[in-house]
Image (tube, rainbow, N blue to C red; front, side, top):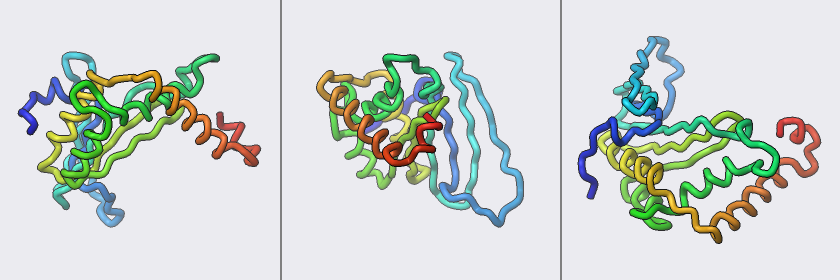
Length: 172
């Protein structure tokens, strides 16, 4: 289903951690992190851990709420949601279907300074995650109706986190 793609054209701005998805608190040995910079300026980090045939693929975008100004607050979080709404190549639901068929789990989160997407999957399935991430980086569709719907979802998430929690407002 997926053609081999050169890592330099697939990683397009991510962080790739290969190895166990669960940290082993007993091991104290330092595992080296290898850092590479692609021709397009994207940074790639690889940390190998052979204790289990599991990989975690993470893509971190340098965008979060601190980059937003009045009038567009929350847009980073809305775009995080939109990344799961389909691309030209993989319409709505296909990304999740393929992830599931490959025994993987995925999620995303938005913070003050970054938005990250990740998959946990068998290490021999890294190519699947990289193909999907590469595609949604290049071919994301932003249907206005879906954008409006996700904007309301993000507003509700904010209300849920801040209503009746006065100290939560100080972290906005």
